[in-house]
Length: 95
Image (cartoon, rainbow, N blue to C red):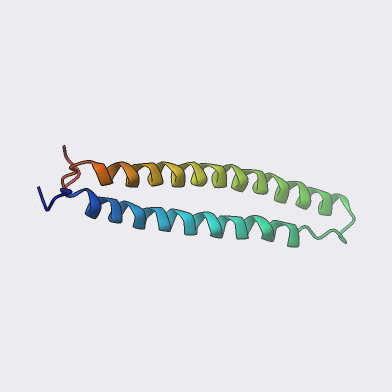
């Protein structure tokens, strides 16, 4: 056991760093979603233009679902970081 709190604070800090990386991924994914609107090419009025917009819309849905999963992962990482504070977590991840 390292110090009065064990290894929990060190593990928690490491998990918090992972959480920051996940949050940055979420931010970048939101930027990608915002970019989908810019590439819709609304002026392109033809069957090909509509097919293109349909394809972009399908991709946007897939990215939105991925963003939802990233946010869920971010919440799970935050919970784990808090739990690590009170646990005597060994540095190698074993118990």
